[in-house]
Image (cartoon, rainbow, N blue to C red; front, side, top):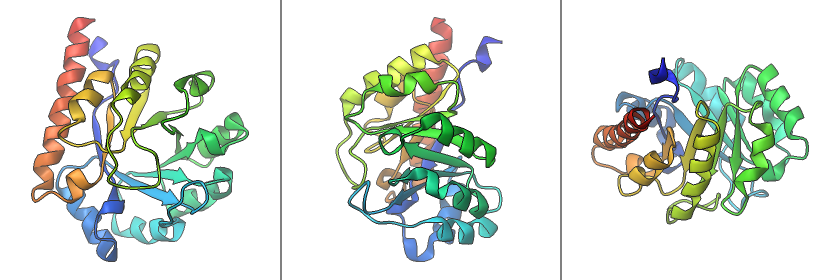
Length: 231
């Protein structure tokens, strides 16, 4: 049935902007507000200038949030080094940066064999064409809509052409956007064809996170419906 061609809408708050001193409670609050998954930014101080957290945090969160989908955004050099650690810690999706990887097919296979979904991320300066040869190996393409490594940056509207190209070429692929995404920019992402929406401060800093999540979801679901009608 045509209705099932387009992957479904999923909203994943980025937990980096939440109160890290009570992370499990914050994560639970986001899930209770209607989130579909959680986006966890792993930064190593090398690939990006910032430093965040690694697999020990995931391992501690997993028993407290047994059924939550953890999407690990690995902003690290040598992403192959952490696959087993993250799988053991209970991660569900391992999204590495193509710019940091020498042998993409090998890393994709390693992630799949460890039982996680494969995500490939692109920095704003990286042409979308770099991931086209690997489309059959990846589950999720993450288009960065800001330069990775710093929060609170302006959304880059010109990244939407990457999303559009991927959506046109791979109608079934999960396409994720991350960086400056919130109520003001969601329509652009939705219309371009993104279905996995990462949003940081727009959700975690809101007085009513549930309302923001629902706003983001409505925008994406309307765009999906519209694109199906046009087919």
